Length: 406
Image (cartoon, rainbow, N blue to C red; front, side, top):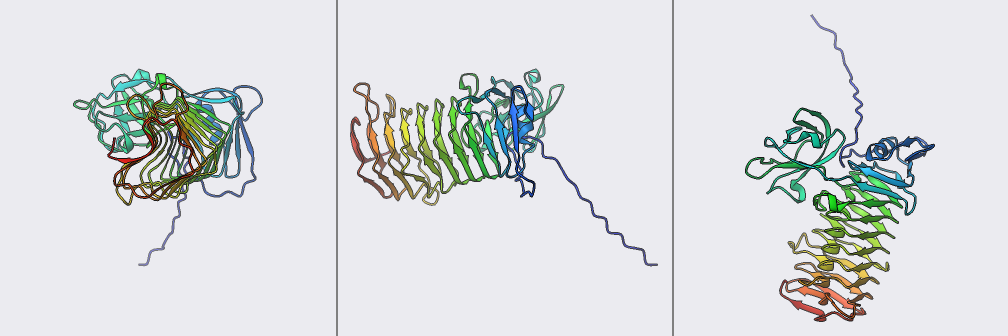
């Protein structure tokens, strides 16, 4: 007997809720462009004073839309995650995203790879919607930490989404969870613009999170993103960080007061432009070029990179294939960097090469207590570094030097 054949088609539409910087790319839309407004009071599409209100507004966006955030200080318990194809605009000098006070608890049990439920010693410190970081004494930096969001709390169990990405040891390595996260974010997105936003990391009340997974303004796996007329300040980590990204333009912006780096193009980011920016008073480095960062342009832009703790511009040691080759620095001011221990305008480690440094002012301008030892320090083994037509005055030990790593 021949049975009839039925074909069943099931269409599932899932709503992607706000995660702590985890995004599925937004596809194109034929909807007309709209302006969505968020404000602390008054006539707006969304009113509120915290990250939940802002994320609600962001979730209303479609490609081509603009999110306008009104003046005021918004308390951020989680990341503000922005989708593809939109502009986010604040009120110049008046829209502030302020990181909430940090909390932390030990894990009550190990947190293994792929965990969505973690037992913690002090669950009362957390609440649903809060962004979190999971780590231990060994897995405490780079890509080894997990950034997630608390979806729910049941007794001592925190329900997390997304799941953890490593095995965290609660007994021998003091596994712990804390509400640390990047603040203003785009991930797996393209064609995004941030304008006129102030993002404050409140570093005095928060733990350190480096630029691989964190930053006051943070981008991961993005294309064609512009940060314009924004301020990143006081983040316990990096100010503006973008990883595995292409055509990120940071323009007319300021990054200061971070404990780490001012601006951090990282992990294979290509064709970066940093233009007319000020990076100053950061704990480590003003502009840090990480591995495989190539074809960047830091030219004709009058960047000011000043009074950072170690170096104004720093190329780290990498393999030949991963080093930060082929970058141009032109018409910048690299001033007064360093501390009592070390100080450089540019520090280039091997095998980085094909670097052009021309028409810049690389100087220590102070009359006393100078700390910038060399304008350009090239570690032996680095490739071609072309230094031309720069003004290099006041550096304690010299203008250009090739020597051993310091």
